[in-house]
Amino acid sequence: MPRGAGRGGRDGYALLLVLFLLAMATAVGLVVMGNGLSARKLARVASIAAGQDQRAAAATWTALDGLLAQGDADIPPPRRLVLDGQALTVTVAPETGRIDLNGLSRKALAQAIHTLGFSEGQALKAADAIAAWRGMDPPGANGLDLTIDPVRALWSLEDLDAIPGLNPDIAACLRRWGTVYARGPFRGLAPLVRRPGAKPAAGEERGEGPLGLVAGGMVRVTVAEEGRPQVRRSVLLYRGVGQQAAGSGTDAESPWLTLEWQRPVLAGRDACVMTDRMGTDRGGGL
Image (cartoon, rainbow, N blue to C red; front, side):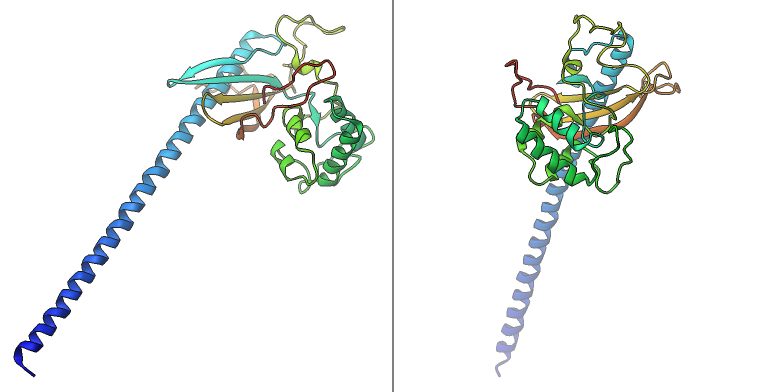
């Protein structure tokens, strides 16, 4: 074999090795660069979410502090705030007195859904689906002494999505008018929709109105950021103790016990799309 031929082969192998190493280095560089971009995107998403949580929390406590300072039992109108340059709408509404999805018997649940404007047939079918899902009916002779089955009970309004055969319009209404916390009969929509300035109902004194801001009363607070599809929903029980809301930077015991804190839900999913018998739209808050 000529001497030059061996050298040429070795040079060829060396060139292939160099090209292979260059290709590997390029591939590794692309992967590293790609991971870097992904990491930055994830960090940005996490940062945005953290910002939303912080603003929603601040808006929630602002509304609750205002509610305590106001000392009024009427439902306050939605409040618009601007935090960190972002506009938010915070809404406070009573949780007590809503349709108790765990505590009402099948018959009482059907009657409550019928009150929302659905036909008796639709209401019965929906009540059957919910009762079959939770696996308990009746929950007691008077519908109040329910011992919750931790496996089958509804633990969030979002559990309605998992119930087979449940009418989606009824589910949407129940996301607004239902609750998984309150224990008691459903007394209709009127106590939940009063506005400031409304006269107290018969036998109802000032300070003991629809919000029920007494020990054991529950409120639902929702915070929506303008231009974003998600809202954050919180449910709190008023304990009637302490002087300041939690998060105020003091050691005072909070008058609020958090039952559900800033659960993200899609805007509009809690809005009832039905119209009541009076012909007025009940869509709106969460």
